[in-house]
Image 1 (cartoon, rainbow, N blue to C red):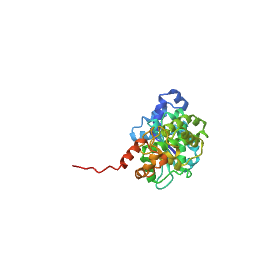
Image 2: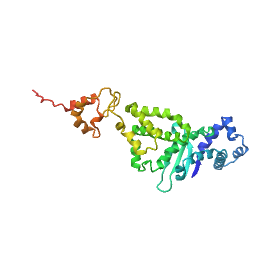
Image 3: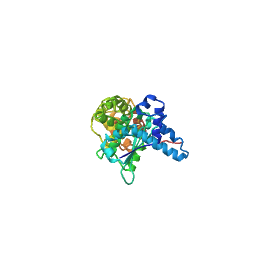
Length: 303
């Protein structure tokens, strides 16, 4: 596996060190390095840029920063043994810190990781990198069953709500498994629990509690299980409770239709919502609308 670091990231790391003498001393970086100063004397711009690139890459390796990145990858043997190349580039914000896998028509896959420059000299990149490596490990693991069909992947990206739910569920089970290997991930438990509550609050506290236990403490759940939860979580919940969303209009409701009324409207609702079942219920407002649509109006006499 080849580990490559974009020059943009290396230069941003050097800029960070130039503003923090303590970090610079810890990595052995000197802004007045004679070898570096001599490069400014190269007249040809192309040759000068190439020389600086070589200098930066050599310093990055000598400072142990490249080795720190490789060490994190080596903690995931399936990933390190499968990908041909891991490229590290600069992230512009914490939201951009991700790992992605790229598969070509031929040859082994490649991985690209985006990291904030300040994380490397401060050595705070490890948790982020471990989290992203576990995601890529799951994608490569046949037991997880991540889809490789481009059409299926486009479906995953099509609905923002499903995509957000899927991310919450996957992040939860990733950090749960990592917490058993690396104790620092146990600190993420409250945060992941809040994410689950915010995204699936309509299921009710008892269901959320059981779901959290399954994903945090359980083994790898698999893509199919996570996708089912993200796109159709209604089967996880019990009876309709006050404040839960109506399965038809999706608005939270504190007034559910009476069972007798649901039975009377069953056929009309199923025509519009084939996957709906009476056990899911529907809000009183939706029941009123369907009841009004089913009313038989007397003939109107126009004089």
